[in-house]
Amino acid sequence: MARDIGPKCRMCRREGIKLFLKGERCLTEKCAIERRAYPPGEHGRGRIKQSQYLLQLREKQKVRRYYGLLEKQFRTTYDRASRRSGNTGENLLRLLETRLDNVVYRLGFAGSRAQARQLVRHGHFQVNGRRVNIPSFGVRPDDVITLRAGSGAEALIRDATDLTASVAPWLQADHDGLTGKVLKWPAREEIDTPVQESLIVELYSK
Image 1 (cartoon, rainbow, N blue to C red):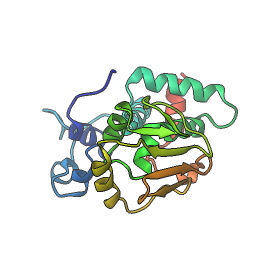
Image 2: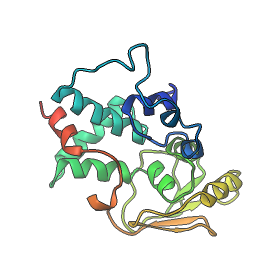
Image 3: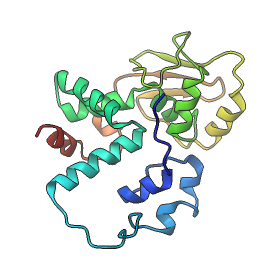
C-alpha cells in the first residue's frame, strides 16, 4: 500500500493551514502552525512570487494532503468526478468525502484520517455486514458502518469518540454502539473542507 510517510506537520506549514493530520495534537499548542506559521525550509520566510498556476497547484496539494491521497490516486478520483454529470469540483469533493476512511473519521471513530485509514486497512470495520479493508471504498446513502465483532481496536475507537464534538450532517453516528449510517450524499455546503475546488478544476483543465 503506497502512502506518504513524510513529516505531517511540515505539510500543514507548507499549506499555511491546519490539515488536522495528527489528530489531538493539532488542537494543542504543540501544533506546528501555532509555533511556526511560515513555510518550512531555508527560504520559508522569503518572499514568494504569486501566480495563478501557483494558487491552483497549492489548492490541489492542500486537498490531496487533507484527504491523505497520493498524486496518482487523486488524479484517478478527479477523472471519475469529471465523467459524472454536474459540477466537477463538487463531484470531486463528494467522492473524497464518501471514501470509507474519511467516513470513519467523520463519524468520530478515529482521531485522524491516517488513523482511520489504518483501522480500515486492518479490517476493523464492516459495511452492511461485510468486512471491508479498502480505504478508498466508496459508501452510498443507507450504508451502515459497524465495528467488526471482536475487534481489538474498540478501546482506541472509544477514546476517539470521546474527543468528537459533532458529526457531519449527512451522517448518523451511535457512539455507544459504535455504528454509523450514511443518510444521503453530502451537499457542498455540508463539506467543511477548506478549499476552492474551482481552482483544481482549472488546473486539470489546462
